[in-house]
Length: 166
Figure 1 (cartoon, rainbow, N blue to C red):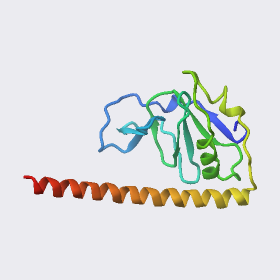
Figure 2: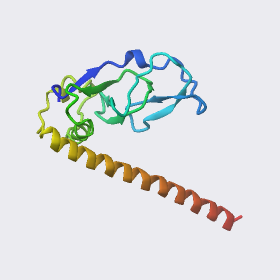
Figure 3: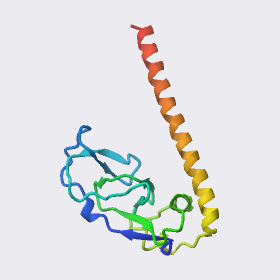
């Protein structure tokens, strides 16, 4: 994996204030399950990830990861920011490969350098990576769409139940 991904220490992207507000523009992310902590009005030290140049936020202690394709700041330095060494590789394919490594942390220590960077993976041709990566990206987009629909239906049901018992 260390030959696939470059890693960057995220220190220069750490948010200075935790006074988050949904009216601000820049998301503040964490590598944990909550992912989005809030929004900041800080304009310096922003990691400029894009659709063409995404990054993976890798939690160095839990080994969880998130795909990010938009500008952001972060809450803490307990992570690595991963980007491709070779831009001809398919990022989404490599991200899914990383996410599917079967490894359970046994101790509270950084895992990218000591463990993950030395894992060996099967690396298909760029054409195959592109096809697989595109398929999974489309599948994830469909899942996200259905999750949003589910949330709206759950809110609708909640509203009907409140009306029914008021």
